[in-house]
Image 1 (cartoon, one colour):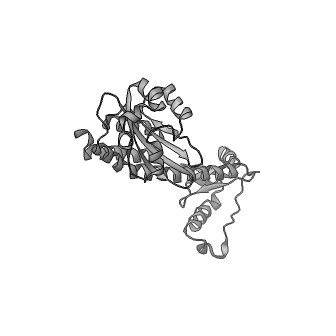
Image 2 (image 1 turned 120 degrees about the vertical axis):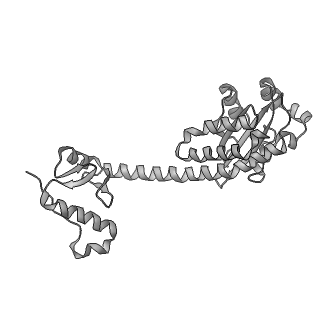
Image 3 (image 1 turned 135 degrees about the horizontal axis):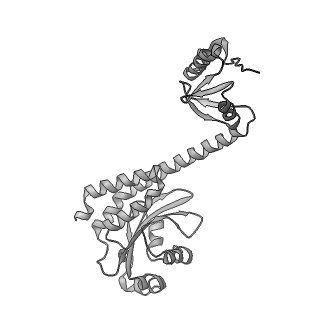
Length: 266
């Protein structure tokens, strides 16, 4: 099928990795997957292994109240096919009508009370992450007017799954790094002594609040085009050399150390 071509697959995979740096893009990815799968809507969810409910991280547009009811009123055991995907193998799609017959599906409370009133037929769910503390699931749900989810459509979801996993895990690492950096900044900002972090060239990477006050009055340190400088020209060059030496290796500092007297008027 043209809608399941390798070119479309590659384009969606690219969009998935873009979400690592821009998590707001997940909704757009779900919309593209919905269109490609000829589905009614698609979701991506993360669930705690200690819980029996999932929480959508993103989804394509669908009735917000219905989706709230789906998350709050139906657990893994109540949604046909969902438990099979949760306990099954990773990267293995589970289509509802390959798990139970349509007659059995239509007799379930979930179908009668939730799916049927919305004109929905079946879903296909794939587990893309399974760690000790969480499970990642992506699912597509079809309308009643179309055929059953095909083997080719299931294969398409299976090809997306490893990329969903990598993107989510990379995103986790970046989030941890952001949290760590934020904690360090908060710790530095609570110090009364001025602290400036720079690169090897003296480019200012971060200045705590006390240092910002000094930079604002340009003494005894100041910023010129984003570079840390001493107000006193007698030690300006020595400061640049000390920063460069410290960036290369501690051993290059020798016995001189890294202390420099920087004065200012008064």
